[in-house]
Image (cartoon, rainbow, N blue to C red):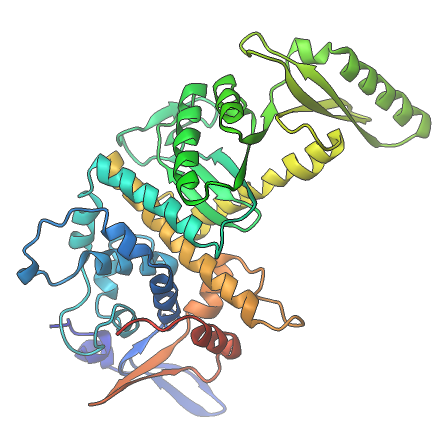
Amino acid sequence: MPQATPAMNVDSANPFRFPAVARKKVTAAFDGGRLTSDGGVLLLAQAERAMGICQRLAACIADPRDPARVVHRLDDILRARVFAIACGYEDADDLDALRDDPGFRLALGKLPGSGAGLASQPTMSRWENAPTTRELASMMVAMIDIYCASYPAPPVAVTLDIDDTCDVVHGYQQLSFWNGHHGERCFLPIHVYDTATGRPVAMLLRTGKTPSGAEAAGHIRRLVRHIRRNWPETHITIRGDGHYGRPEVMAFCEAAGIDYVFGLPTNAALRADPAIVAAADACAVKRAEEGRAILRHYAQTRYGAKSWKSQRRVVARIEASTLGMDIRYVVTSLTEGSAEHIYDTLYCARGQVENLIKRHKAQLASDRTSCRSANANQVRLILHTAAYWLLWRISQEVQKAVAPNTMSLAAAEFATLRLRLLKVAARIIESTTRIRVAFTSACPDASVFRAIATTLPPAPA
C-alpha cells in the first residue's frame, strides 16, 4: 500500500501563517489533497513510450526474479529513474520521496491512490549494479539503435562529434585515475553527438587518462559498425579535437570510407612549412599596412608525420594581431572545399558539442557517477542519456507546437523546459470510472503543453 503522503499526515496538516495581505489573514497547511508539482512527467511518459527507450534497455538485462512475485517490472524501474532525472531528481535517493507522488504513479501506469508505491532507492541501486559487462555492451548498442530510430528515414550524411570530458570522482572508484591536465582524480567519459540536431549517440565511461590512438580507433570502429547495421548507405564524417587526430583513427576512417576533420597539434615541421610560412608572413604584413587589430588568413599544405603512412591535407588558420601570431591546424580527408570553409564552417562547428556536454552534465547531472563499480556508473551514464533523449524529444515537439512568432521555448535549454513544462502543479482527482488531472489555471505555457500532449501518441493502457 502507498505510504502516507504529507497531506495525510496530521503534523503536516497543522496550519501556519504568512503575513496578512490587504488586512486579510493568510494561513496555510499541507492539506491540499492529491497534488503533484511535476505534472509534466505525463509528457515524459508519452515521449518515452513513443521512443521505447526503457523497454529496449530492460530487454538487455537478465531478470532472474520469479515472475509470479514481481511487483515492479524492470522497465518500470528504469522508467521511474529516468523520469526522475529528467524532472531534476538526479539521485536514486529521491525515489523514496517520489514513490507515492500521484504524477509519477500515473506516468508509470499506476492508480494515484491505491496499490504498491513505485520502486524504492534500494531496488534501483540493486538494478544499477546488476548488469554484467556483456549486458552493458548490449545496452550501449540499444542506445545507438535509438539514435538511428530517431530519424524517420536514413539520412544521406551525418557528422558525429566525439569528445571527452572531465568527470571528477568522489572516492576511489574503479577506473578513476589522476589526470595532470585537469588536476583531478577523475573519469574521462567519451561523448558522441550528432551535433547538428542535438541528438546523443553514445556515452562511454572510461578511465581518467587521455585515450590512446588505438583505444580511440577501437571505440570509433565499434560505433561505426553499429550505425552501419541501421544505415548501410549513410555517409559518416567524424569530427574531433587533437586528441582524436591520431594515425590509428585516421587510418581506420580512410579504410572504412569515412571522412574526418580533426584538430592537429602544432610542431616544428608544420611551423616551418613553406606554404604556411608564406601565408603567415603575408598576413602579418597586410595587418601592419592596413593598421588592423586582427587579421585572419588561411593556408593549406600536404603534411605527413613520421608515424603516418601517407601525407594528408592540413589546413591552417592564421591570425595576426597586436599580440602576435596564432596558427591553428586541422587535418582532414576532405578533398573539396576551401581552407577557410574547412576550418571556419566545418571544424569550428564542433564547438557546439561542448554546449551539449555541458547540458548533459550541468542540467541532467550525468556526472553523478559515485558508485564503486565501473559497471554501475556506466548504467547511470546510460540512464542520464535516456533522460536527455526524453527532453530532446520534448524540445522537438515544442518546435512543432510553438507558432513562428512566439518561439521563446523553441531553442530553450533543458533546464528551461523543465521549469516551464515539467514543473507544473496539478491536482489529480480519481473517481470510480475516471482520473482527471487538473493543471494550474495560471500555467503560462498551457497552450504549448496542450499542443505537445495532443501531438505525442498516448501512452498504452
